[in-house]
Length: 77
Image (tube, rainbow, N blue to C red; front, side, top):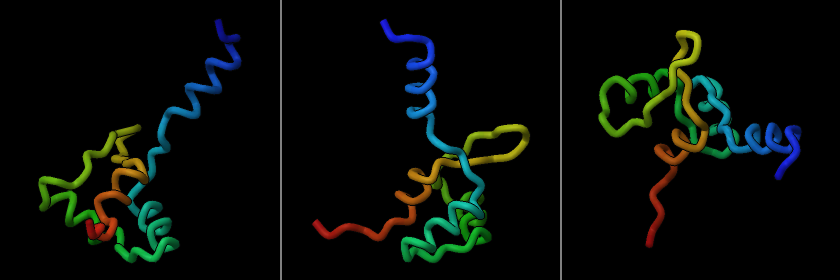
């Protein structure tokens, strides 16, 4: 059985970081994917396949991985 401190540490590692679209836009730009937060908000309103956000304290937040996958260039297989 794991000690309580180990359980808390494992839970913290597994929980994805929730971010606003502006922060995700900044992180994508570092990777060479330029998508402005305003465009992301339009896609959120108009497209049915945009990742679903999580509301925390009245703010809608997303995981970086979900949005980055959405905007990632298509892979040629």
